[in-house]
Image 1 (cartoon, rainbow, N blue to C red):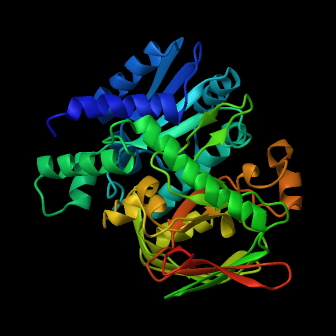
Image 2: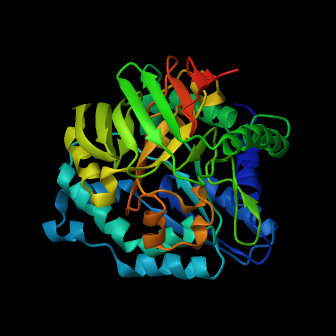
Length: 410
């Protein structure tokens, strides 16, 4: 990539201008691994050039996390620092925008006790509930982008040497985020307009249920009254548009908490807490997971499902055509930001309040009363494939094809 530095600057500009859509006199909070320092500096340059008053970087090092799991006293895994949670809430209440850079080793924690990971995620989830509520109500803008790590690149391209693997992963990231187009901002505008056409159609139909069928999957998902399909981007409480995930190809809504029945099988590995869960199956009755299995990562899956009562239910159903940029790479990225946007998926845990009429004005109890799930976790897992069919079922029982052979039906 002879023009790598140019592409990196375009990527940083896209993350700042289109992702979080930063405004003058805002604070930008960046959550980033120390390996992303060059990209963070490019983002800071774009942010300050856009008139922000401060760029605050919350650095992290996943190797330190591994050291903690291996050497810390057992009681620390049930603790999450209050100051971390309250500082995020304070920054959010002051109107900051939040940009996260996802860059990790998919196999980092493969030898760590799954119970320690589950306890750590649960403690973090509880502590961050206040901040998550602010995000879910649309009071702040946030976005996630990703850059390669050596370990991640070698996982995706195991037959290449390290340098070539990193280069190849960068090329794919630039492609699926449309950074390598002549005008990435315009390319994203066109992409969002196409997604909006699909969300408008689904919102007009207001299906009562969706029926998913493919190998290992026969699942009916009821949708709550006044549900809303969302895709591409969101608007905050000041009506400023932003794009939470870059890349994004999904259109999503909330299921009815108690209206999920049948069996669903994963079609891509799930990278959760530094571990991979592969080839797993969930069985639902009246919305609740009543049985599950996994060829790899069973204990990790168990810890995820048993996070709290809400993690026994799903909070998101998302539609992604098989014929889409990320899927067409033919790669398994071992990174949920990418893999979820290559495949239809569901999410274990909480629903998004934006997915039901007036949801952002409701408290937890009111959301539950309207059929939405609440939980301290929200974890996407992929169920799409070339053979997946989805039918929409109306209140009168009429069936209409939505997906045929993995793609939008004509």
